[in-house]
Image 1 (cartoon, helix red, strand yellow):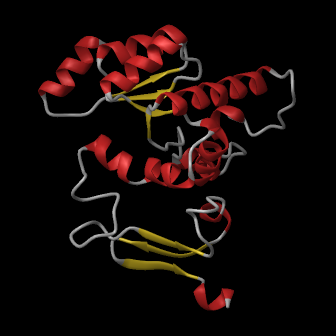
Image 2 (cartoon, rainbow, N blue to C red):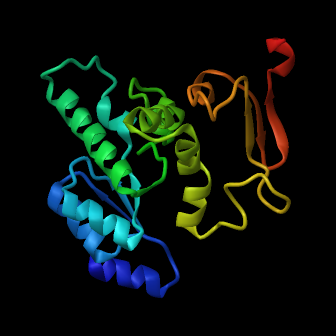
Length: 203
């Protein structure tokens, strides 16, 4: 992992390390990964290192709570796995870890299956708020934080002149109720082009 991180950084690239195991997640952070993907079980020492190093955390809470699209019940190993992820996220939020929002997968081969990858993107924000973030912090995890992780702070993550015009409008105030980013999207712009406009229909 360390060799991979060093090589990526020498080439001016960012590196994300995917880990579901405790030791793998710890080693990824110590190796200097720019972001840790998943990491459902982290100890306090690893969380402190993430804060110290500025490691971004993409826990994919929604995916981990139901990765196979099946009903989840208490006692099911999948439920326990997802619950552990949520509890780790709660501790990481309190410690001040920097979060980014991710979904784990959205390739074409998944779209026609029952695996709910396509629903994960915005629902992740709801889990972040449930775990202790303010709606503002959760929205930052989907906008300015990913831009910082990618080194694209002057192109992405804000609504300002010169930035990519990728914008959504929702019915309601997402700073008070982040759920509206999931349930009440009414208008979508991609690269300056309006792709969806339901504003007239909603009036």
